[in-house]
Amino acid sequence: MTAYIALLRGVNVGGRAKIAMADLRAVLTNLGYTDVRTLLQSGNAVFDATGDEAEVEQAVEAALAGELGLTTRCLIRTGAQVRAVIEANPLAGLNDDGSKMVAGFLSEMPGAEAAAAFDPVALDPDNVRVGDRVVYQWCPDGISNAPTVGVFVERKWKVVLTGRNWNTVTKLAAMA
Picture 1 (cartoon, rainbow, N blue to C red):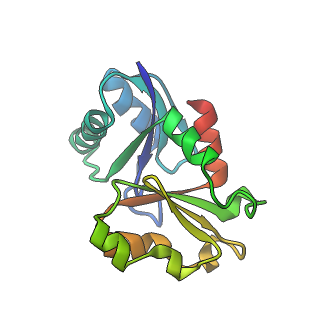
Picture 2 (cartoon, one colour):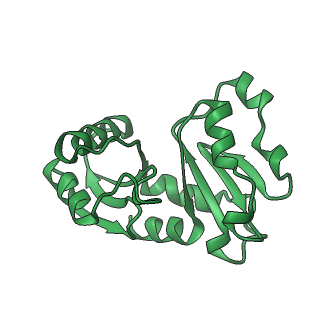
């Protein structure tokens, strides 16, 4: 069994794609996953499962659509991968407030051409860095006042991104 973290994209934000965390736990349990726990109301779950990331991701997305009629992307990371994101944080010296630091988890890295042509670091050179399937963003004036790196990355790189503030990332890592 592997400890996985599920990051649902765009749920319970702005009144759309609503899902109760009890329903999310039920869906994951119905898939045969064990030790299922959720964090906050924004589509974060930690659980144990067999299978690789891609299999788990597809199973969760299909079950959410089939059982709840919810179509959304689900990015899966292992607990070890999320801990590696924390350890590799190139902006660690800047982020003194976890509510102003964002990890934008990517469905995949972009192709070389897209990455070269559209560098999100250019949006805020002092506060944005790209890691392994993650974009780090420090938002010293708050997330709502920072450049919209996630929108830029999704449009230009043609990948899915779901962001979590640093407080959530560290709690999920500890839960896994």
